[in-house]
Image 1 (spheres, rainbow, N blue to C red):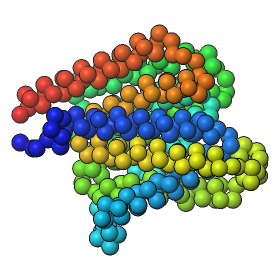
Image 2 (cartoon, rainbow, N blue to C red; image 1 turned 90 degrees about the vertical axis):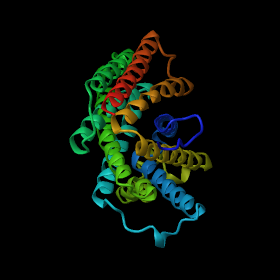
Image 3 (cartoon, rainbow, N blue to C red; image 1 turned 180 degrees about the vertical axis):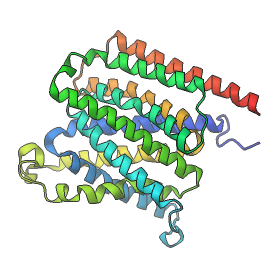
Image 4 (cartoon, rainbow, N blue to C red; image 1 turned 60 degrees about the vertical axis):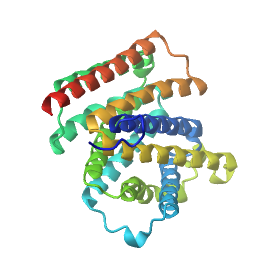
Length: 314
């Protein structure tokens, strides 16, 4: 039997812990983007976020005693490219949706990614997709829909309608990106390449908008010179939160199947609600608590069913 990574935790429990930390970091990233608001364009946010991520990834690699000469070429460069493209487009859509919707609603609607990840990992990675997991994902989506329902009246406007579509698109693309991360983990791709795959795609796409912003687009219609140290600190926080999410996402999906790991990220809806309250959104209604209970119950029951199935197979 495999030795447990921690004395009291099984490997799967550690994987779930990684995923909870990851989704909390990503929710923090969304909150920071909401705070920055229109003071910077989405492309600028992505550029500085990506630049911070690259420096952090390279710095951590060197501090751990790694050497670039011994890193070697990527094992699966096309999967790395797909991971970067899907993640970049998902972030673009997600950050745009945050500007059009309350933070909690944008976070909830983006949580369709477990369905996409489960189906894609079943199609392309051959991972099992049991009926219990499909039912749990459907129930979780129902919980998400119940939580998002209070914003239904707001969603009748064109801006929030577009925000809803962008959040859902971001969820689907995130599921594809997570499937790629799972494939990279199974092939034992170097973690550094996995961490760099997203920012190295975002940087060239966003460099012009960030370094040469149009006067009408920069700083919400102002000039870049109007930006103070506070905004640069928020850019740094954006990069730190995203890097933390990426690190723990990669580690979690090295341990867990994509369907199990990504469904755990529904926990991000809870932190999304409370961060939204701190940013001025209303306190969650009874629908939030019922929807959250459905999500947690579905995750627990699906994991128990999967564990029983694995015992029978062994």
